[in-house]
Amino acid sequence: MVPRECRSCTKCCEGWLSGVVDGEYFYPGKECKFCIAGNGGSSYESRPIDPCQTFTCAWILDESIEEDRKPELNDAIISVNNVNNIKFAELTPAGERFDVDTLSWFILWGLNRYGNVAWQDKQGVVFHLGSPEFSRLMSAASK
Image 1 (cartoon, rainbow, N blue to C red):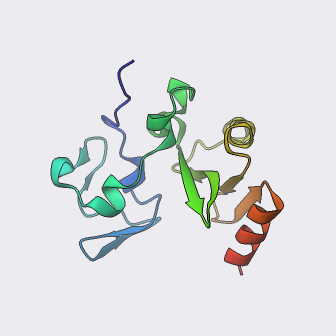
Image 2: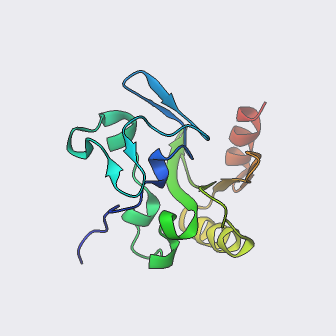
Image 3: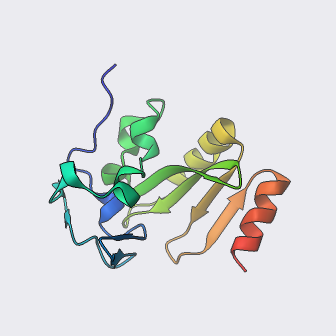
């Protein structure tokens, strides 16, 4: 099976996620300075290691995720994170079409795959489900 590719999807650098590239911040409402929406980054081959090369969307990693869950088609970025040795799936809204079907699918997929899930609503409020250790970690992080 051929690995999936981003191709025209640029949701991770369009300002739906947060990070710093070459000393410049991107965050919800401000895209990465290298982003060319719908066409990838202006310097994809020489993109910075962090965060660009270290972030990999779960849609690319996990072929069990359906094609129509690709972020540019679904307006939701799915990632897998590890904090304090606790692995969890995270869903971040990336546009206007984020819906209850996407959230329901994500919660079931993430709990079955990783046992812990976190997601944000469009207002940036973070929710989570999972193990007691994960719940304590997420509750502490939100304070």
